[in-house]
Amino acid sequence: MTKLKVICRLRGTAGELDRSTAGGTREAPMFNGGNRRGIDATDLEKINIVLSTMYLCIDYAMGYIGTRGGSAFAADCKEEMLKSLKSGDINMALMEDAATFDYVVAKIEALPRH
Image (tube, rainbow, N blue to C red; front, side, top):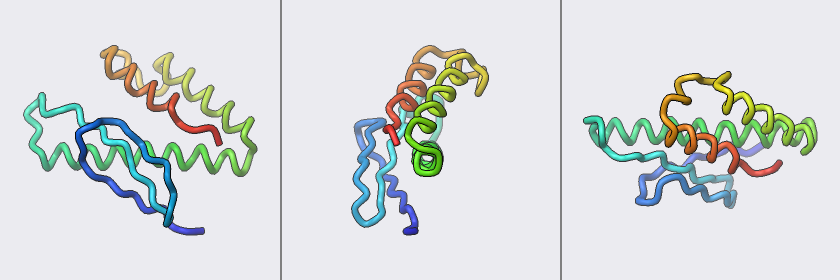
């Protein structure tokens, strides 16, 4: 198995994901919502790297589940994850801000079928 290389770089359009795997690399979506709370650029970059990596980990896990359990099992897992996310079972704090909630749900819904 080749190692998955994560290439994170800041760019102007937030949340885009390039799913090309040429050379075993994948580009992570950037979650840069701006500097509204006094977070300096270095901290924001670290937050982007962490969130992008977490998103890629979810994508990797869904692919692994699809490979081991089949695509129907992976689709069921994603659906149950979305139900739990939307009901607040995963993180109730997400429910406090509608824009953040919509953004996170959209990211999970956008995960590819495996």
